[in-house]
Amino acid sequence: MRRISLLLASATLAGCATHIVPVEQAAQVPATRIVDTTYTTPHDDAQRITIIRNAGAASGSLSGLTISVDGKATAEMATGEALPLYLPKGEHLVTAKFGVSFLAPASLALTTPSRFPVVRFDMDSGGARLQPALE
Image 1 (cartoon, one colour):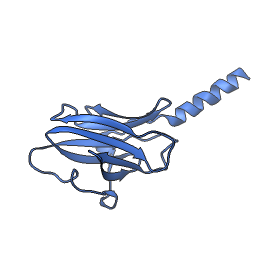
Image 2: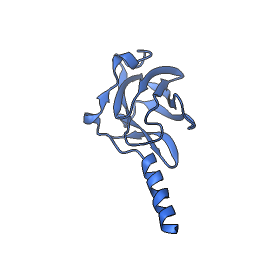
Image 3: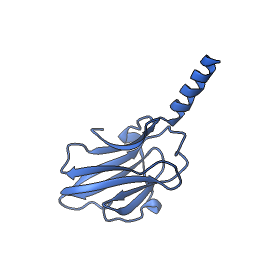
């Protein structure tokens, strides 16, 4: 009985974890799910930071993930998608929030210029988080 309980617990936790989607394999968020183009349009003196929603988590994978920058809803992402942002120099708050979920929003304070060109949205048994990455 103990073995079965351990296996079930392991399977449940494994179903909650994401796996990394390589930048070059991530699909671009379609224009129909871009809510505001303020930070998705390239412009001078802005650094490109790509948000990637990693794939694989069972919980939350069917729910849209809204990405906000500095309190402004920017786009809704599905798993395995990438959202290029063009952030001007300075401090920014990037927030990821599920449309329907029991999980609290995940936020990350970014200062541009940054040495991290990618920010990944990950989930595991510890919750959801945005974290900077090199690729």
